[in-house]
Image (cartoon, rainbow, N blue to C red; front, side):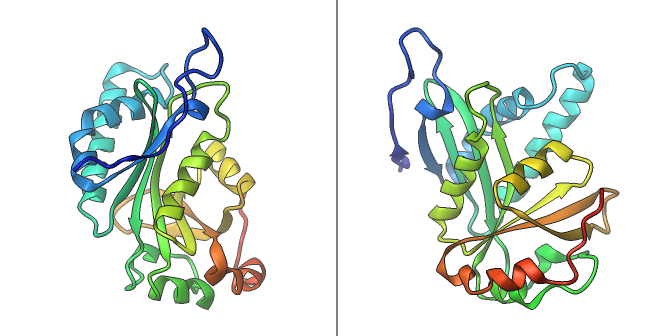
Amino acid sequence: MNAQPEQQQPNTSRAGEPATLNAARLRRLNRWQAQGMGEELADLYTDSRETSTPEAYRGRKRQGFLHRLTGDIRRPGFAMVIAETDHLMGCAFGFPVASDGFWWLGFDGALPRSIEQLTESGGAFAITSTLVRPHPGDHDAARRLQVRLLSGHQASLGAALVDQGDHPTLAALRSWGWRDRGEVWRPAGRTTFRALVLPRGERAAARREGLAHDAWTRWRG
């Protein structure tokens, strides 16, 4: 069964102008639908990245994305939201954080009790990728995709791991209200991540003050 569009607007914002994500419809996909769009999603990933890199390097990055996408699709509760007009313009996807706390493996320091509680109760949802086809009129397109994805799962806490060298993404998330909670080291990889969280909804509201004042939070340039 095909998922129905959650939002639909005209495909052009003004006569003669190309459609932007503001004029797109947002649609939720299940794991089977997402799997069937693998190549199209890989094209979106490539288009959303720098175009000046060598073709061979871009090919490796594309295959790496498809490998990560396949792994995420297999996760329990996987969900994706796409934005489309006459073609795919953006997507955000992820899965619920398991109550065993595995998502936080390698966290540098003690995980605050406020985050532990939301994880244990199943209220945390990890956004593992947000992609948007570049367009000058869609500055907050990624944010809107994330909001729709989290709202669909009624998540009380959004979670994300971002390469600490990816300064544009970190700056964007912080400007949208995501809070930097510290470093995460993955034993199998060389990348150091920043762990960011986004408290949402009534269940998280009671814990916002604690999240904002946890003494363990560290910012590193």
